[in-house]
Length: 533
Image (tube, rainbow, N blue to C red; front, side):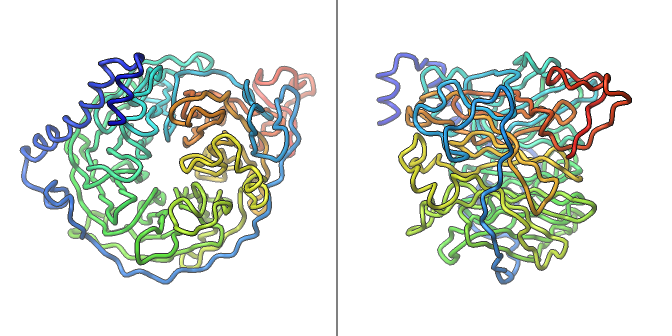
């Protein structure tokens, strides 16, 4: 009834958009029929088993209670050209950002009208540079949103980052509603997504080849290769795509050795939000949201996936360790990296403790943290990445701000990313109503916030027509240009450049003072000036 009302009273909604929504509903059975009809039956992804639990069920190990020191991450001074926040770091009160806010970062380009959950960067075999980003916070809201103007996954030619050019839009059912599953294998040149929504959807998967010309992805396969979808993981060798369901204990490992003929090789009876894989594929780092009836909290699960990676017959996994922490809200993802050869995870929580847990404290925000996994049986928290607005008193005082009271928004983290898995010095995070935040992690125990960007708010149906950002996306990096590619839910795709003065990566010293006079931010001429990073 609500959808019908939206269509009848909002003339901006076109018949094409209504057909788009219906196509998602009607395409799924057609794809299912085609998939089941081709080849031998596969009990691992048999659609008739959708409602069943089951699969590999490893014995659960005890939870480790992690310790935290919930200090506010210090903020460096904002340089010239900044439009600073009016008060507490991370807070965006009503009316404070009509033209956006920025600190030590500047806008290079903007494209599109809305964004979703992932921004990805790829350079193909012919040196085309591309960006991919999903444009659906939640289907069918976008398709029935007047003036939205976009659906599916946008493909951008980034040969000139100041002028992103839309070259294609992917509109197979998984790309229309990938939720948080859009993923990329840089090694294989495969762009993959599984159908998802706020909970889960049947696991229709789309696999695209972007190796030769990323500006125009080629569909390799489309079918019901997973049981359910919401988020995903991808092995570094690009041969195993994991579809996670979040709302159910169900993970599907899909063999993409032949991307034209995907095959489910493992079903896990395991609860997983986002997941990532170690460089060799033998470990999965699983964000356990922890909202099942017999579980009082979530956290990080380190899972042995070596038998899946080795393609053992009837592969089995086993749990190595589980870690939780006092400020936990909803674990979103955990990204592996190394610093001087020592392994760590960048873990991100979303929302607050009351979002899914009855009686939880709405002012306890999980934010993000760095976890040492050098002893994977005894992981521990090294430091936290927290804005001042994430602290209990400040968060409570800001409860009336635009977007702050929305269960789908708020002053909390959602996705973070790093530019490289080896010795990264920078972290960029979407903090929903606080926009994009950038951190220097040169000293892992003492991170600092070095830049932020709050997009000009666009009152839309997704944010309740409020004066707030809807920053949910995982950013992408172009470290050689100090660029961050990012999307805001209600305003689209952005190319941003962090000021040279705060960028912490090591730099080549100039031969003479004249060679690096520091004039013209972003106008490098072969070398950078001295830097203490």
